[in-house]
Length: 196
Image (cartoon, rainbow, N blue to C red; front, side, top):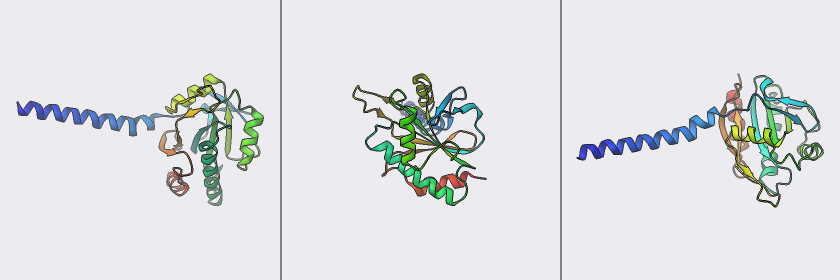
């Protein structure tokens, strides 16, 4: 009888281990930008996920009325951008993508204002600010298992992760959002290690 308990315990532990591996390693690495989605930049140009050249990309989801975690994360990304520019890789080898999860309220003009706050004044600067339809936004967020909902007061509740993609578009790291969780030095080092 003890033998069956041991076998059962081993099977349970194996199942738990497999589940942990799936949700922490396999599932995040399988996430990628959906190839059949085209969004619009804050300056009105189409941006097709299916036509992207190989680059390391950092993807964040935000909404411009967010009172804290979104702008704090974007500020950390701006600091990271400055370091990557100093290293001569930003834009050429590394790109940032910021996607609004509130396209109904985040017009092109609002996204432009938000982008300018962080030193981005147009397209072609290595950092794109995107908006799409509600369906395109949900499809893109779902690809990363990024959850969000508006409880009715305009303050959207959302997952607090950004996503670092390798040159093949696979997630290599989930990065915590917010000043206390987004560590510029660590993300910088991971990006530089990914570059050829």
